[in-house]
Image (cartoon, rainbow, N blue to C red):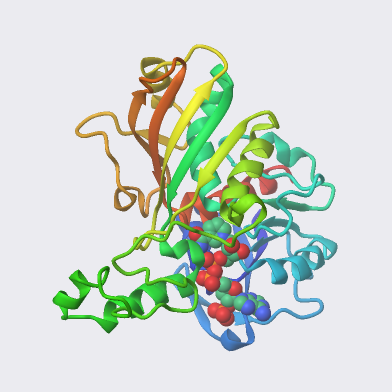
Length: 345
Ligand SMILES: NC(=O)c1ccc[n+]([C@@H]2O[C@H](COP(=O)([O-])OP(=O)(O)OC[C@H]3O[C@@H](n4cnc5c(N)ncnc54)[C@H](OP(=O)(O)O)[C@@H]3O)[C@@H](O)[C@H]2O)c1
């Protein structure tokens, strides 16, 4: 028997990827309903050789649905995810709205699927895209040796900020298209590339060492998410995490370096053996061992490379992780969670 599925934000970057994955993974669907803003009402979205028309959110719009996947910003999720749950659907939320609620599980499908067994609010959250990619790679190592401290620096693509992130980078490249001299000198000439709305500095040809908004102690929202979400997923509040989140002019694929200290013995050889068979992970150990965001874009696993023993202290690894922020970082995990929830019915 198939299920009745709804997607809120189906026209966005994550929502579009969810649609692709539902078809690709042959998710059993009897009925599909898609929702977006009033701008998209009536817009036809392709699905499995046919079309489905966008609806707006309104009273009663979720009636009869089994699962609703939420791919909109926090304020819309806060308003509508509980409405979907009250209508009887199990809700998988990609926004940050409910992630840190005690009674909402925060799940990476390969890491803590058992947390879906307790669903008091009928809402389960997906972690943010950087934490998802990182924790998929680190959880198998944590299980063996226990992570003591984690120092992370991220290289986050513009699609992590949604469709408007893509537009902002496109517009800045387009503004100087064909004008290579000013592009090459852009870093040196103030005002050559005009900043857009999302980032106060140009992102084209640049790197912005501040992803998210500045919060407590000068750390950004993205950095605090790495701290708190990592601990919640791994069920270990003692893990010490220090993060610096950076936006780079890459379209799809988040990457990060991690320096990871363990409580007990762990070295490169042991880590390589564990990662070689870890679910959702592809260890890139041959060749130059340096997978790029482009290598990881459009595929399911997160890629781990540059695996090294930290030469400055024992039981500590340096590694590089990259993964598709729209896929494993959001849509794939949501679809995997929906599959788990449907299987329990
Ligand atoms: N991008 C990522 O890498 C990523 C990763 C993990 C989690 N997330 C989270 O996933 C969510 C979606 O992100 P995204 O990147 O897909 O954003 P996006 O590309 O900006 O898409 C936003 C979606 O929200 C819809 N929307 C806007 N206002 C609405 C309203 N009033 N009612 C109903 N729908 C409305 C938009 O519809 P219209 O097309 O009609 O405007 C669009 O479908 C966010 O919470 C984000 O934080 C994103």
